[in-house]
Image 1 (spheres, rainbow, N blue to C red):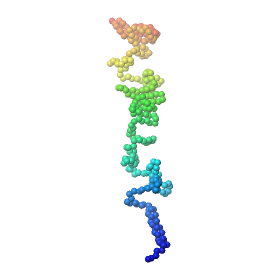
Image 2 (cartoon, rainbow, N blue to C red):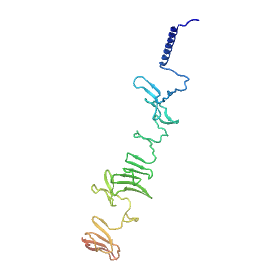
Image 3 (tube, one colour):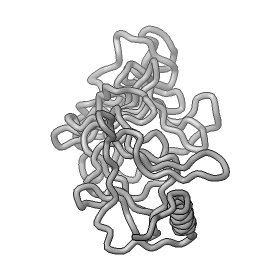
Image 4 (cartoon, rainbow, N blue to C red):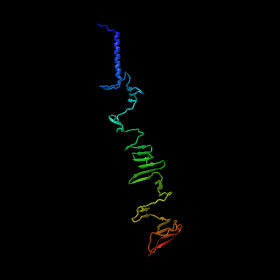
Length: 293
């Protein structure tokens, strides 16, 4: 039997270990290492430890890059950006939720505070824009400057409210508050409807306005007869002269020289009317225009 030298055996084992260590180190430092027939990479808790903090780490220049498992709440966390291919998307439950250009159709709730240009925006329910524009879906009304519009469209300030509204067989437009309504062109008032109902045509403090009526005009009457351009239900005045209807000269009221009362019952030999020859209350009157037999 050959006797083994113990010191030589120990040296042979050390030499073998060094060779193996060199082989392993070289294998682990290969720049491109392919792992075949590998089913999964497992990160197991050691003893009574946890799996938190375990994952992939890349060490080198700068801070360590990580893709690890963290707690509170349980999640996979990375220190770096994740860059998908341009035609790829993030998915939840096999449903795309975000891609390079689109949000998934399953996204219903958001707290976006700033977006770019929107096309074909659709909303459902009440809407508020900058605390100034309010849409109420129940009343189907839109308010600018008010969240309680009094019309289908309402524009309000602290003191006034302009509305556009509808009712049975009619459309309403005007002031809800006790304010005058002005219609302007070229920043010049053309028509004023006063809060008390009076109406001014033209700007009393500006240049004269031309008013044309294309059709028949009735004042104080519901219907204007055919063949009549102007119909009134009371005296008229032009060139500072009053014209009225009566059965005799007036016995009360203030009149000016040249005012005329037309006889409402003209008969043969009677007069067509009476004319005021001296102003007063009622002034002096003389008949004129005797009617023939």
